[in-house]
Length: 426
Image (cartoon, rainbow, N blue to C red; front, side, top):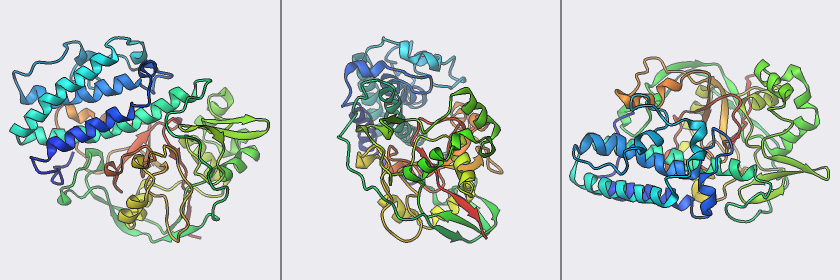
């Protein structure tokens, strides 16, 4: 991670810490106690586990190294709530998190209170590495805030009752402006986090380096439900020529398709499960919960391609400030992508949906992971995954930036993932 010089002054960090921690708890406010332990698939962890794991992070990486006499809340929690840090010890199996009826929700809340009290005292008394690790921990907690939302959606979306998480189904506009392509200059460009700015960044965003781009064109907005429905209606899930080998194998096996993850048909009409309930498919809203394999097949069907992560970043960097300010993020509490606002130029680059790129998640030239066990945070996952950019309607606004590299496996659908098309210069 970069040296977080944009961190708040020492006296403000305890308030920022508590505000972030309280936001995580607030996301669970609509839940019944029965919801806290559900794990509908191995990738979707129970809310109770997220509440405990984010607490484990601060206890393990901040409190224990900084306070030799620190009294841990429960000795077994180091094992139960370790996600993947083999340098700490053997993690509890990810697929079995949902069978942990104990500790109870009340015990996990007590665990959070215990760690929070120690953290606030430490932040008021100490400086140096504990501050740097705390800032990393706050960004880590924001990642899990998003996961709480997306994991809950998977749990609720696979419940026959279609529970409502928040709000009521909204009446969305039924049309969208025609898709346009914006010309983007090529040439020798710089991508990646510039450490000289001394703003926070994860280690996988560095170092800044040069990339040669050919001139290209980028779609001015995300692909809509209506546009993706045309692909479905045209037999897109039945045409092998459109698919990468892995995608077609999954379609044939019945583990992908015949439509995006939460789409359902009733009486020949398309509906979609959303966190505000089961609602008619909004034609103008961005299609979401599509895998990279589906996004790639759609792009080929549309006579286009997916952008590379460098193409996306260069285009986004030019409009970052205004686009982030206007983006649909977690703070809106809409919990669903919305239609692109009428405007000229590139829109929806930040918020609404994470955007699949065509780039494999790999280290940048000269990449060095963070030293020590924290080096397991990003570097060891640089295999067999695809980069996504831009954040989603479940991402905290302060968490995202143009250089941010998210990554998931090609078949993953349960995040708010969408499609932006690109084309080579004609």
